[in-house]
Image (cartoon, rainbow, N blue to C red; front, side):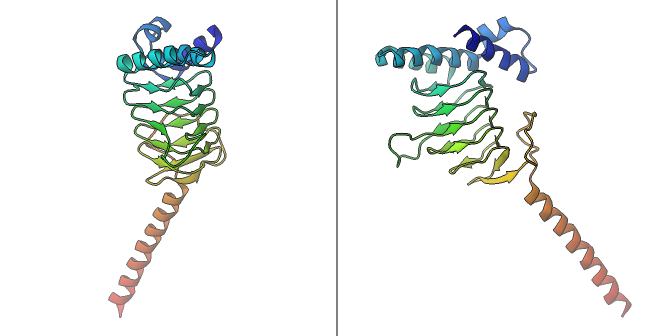
Amino acid sequence: MFETRNSDIRAVLERDPAARSQWEVRFLYSGYKAVRSHRRAHWFLEHGHPFIARWISQRSRHKTGIEIHPGAQIGKGLFIDHGMGVVIGETTIIGDNCTIYQNVTLGGTGKDTGKRHPTLGNNVLVGSGAKVLGPFKVGDNARIAAGAVVLSEIPPNSTAVGVPARVVKVNGIRSETLDQIHISDPVAQALCKLQYRIEELEKQIQELKSKE
């Protein structure tokens, strides 16, 4: 438990340039506090004390604005940045070293039973305001852009953008950046090139017409 707690603190220090010390993270970071409370709540749930587990999670929700069901399974090194409005459902599974921004929902669609919420692999980034809804897998090193609504599986090393989200590859390479806005999109780049080519051809046509 202490190793996991230390990895949670390191995750904040490594990924948030505003974090100045581990003491600041321990006492002032709502995301860290919510994850720490969840680990206690999850322990009580696993040991047959569901009421205490829910009491801890609801108390944390009121203090931090982050709602994590005690049943969710969270790996080490989760960084919830800002965090207000984050909702993580009961059957959610989150891998190691993931990053989640404010107003993210890892939820269900209301039509599934049993496993109702998503599974995030390792090193996944979920941008602010994104909604990931349903019992599917988001692969390792995937990135979900801010405001995206994801309703189906995301392959590893990919980026999901838009509403509903579409998948674009990032050259199969893990992205180390936490930039939620400037996301590589080969489809958009190809369209821009086509648009530029069309404009050039139209100019040539106009020049030919003017010479007639």
